[in-house]
Length: 206
Ligand SMILES: [Zn+2]
Image (cartoon, rainbow, N blue to C red; front, top):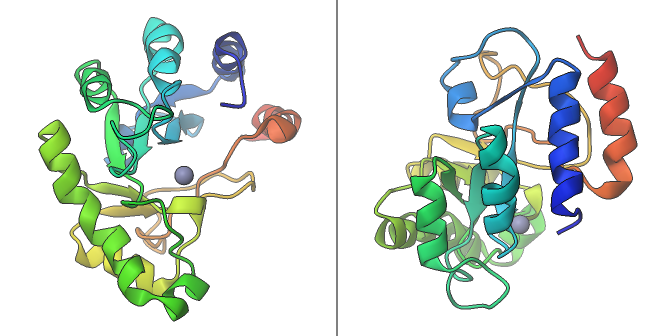
């Protein structure tokens, strides 16, 4: 939502020209990577503009992405992807993960206020996505990128294999690190305001 299609495309091209490989998140999680300069693109929320971003920007460049969606919005709101569009994107090779059910907070405060709601955010998307897409998700991205420890435990108990946080910090993640908490894997959100810092980082990182 923050970039035009042209801007998004040129960002990806720039990453590649700096020597970074654009890999799928599933490939990265399987440890099926070469070298240290790998980026996995993830796109949260399933906004309707994701369809064109995939078809017009990612596919022509053969860049995979993981789409984290919350079932309550799919097909219900004009702002979000229709179920049929999401299925088409899966057929074109995009991964689909869960991003809560209603996109409610799963933070420590949310847990203290209403633990049942946090547990439902973890529990409900898998069945809904299975019914919508025919595939059960194994990856979970916490809405708003923040998770209480109990939320991490709920996501693990719901059968997911990995849970992803998100914030504005630039850092590399070693997914094979035995100390890495698989239910609190950091991701970097790239807003327009953070672009300059991102490319400075990508130029200097090993
Ligand atoms: Zn979100």
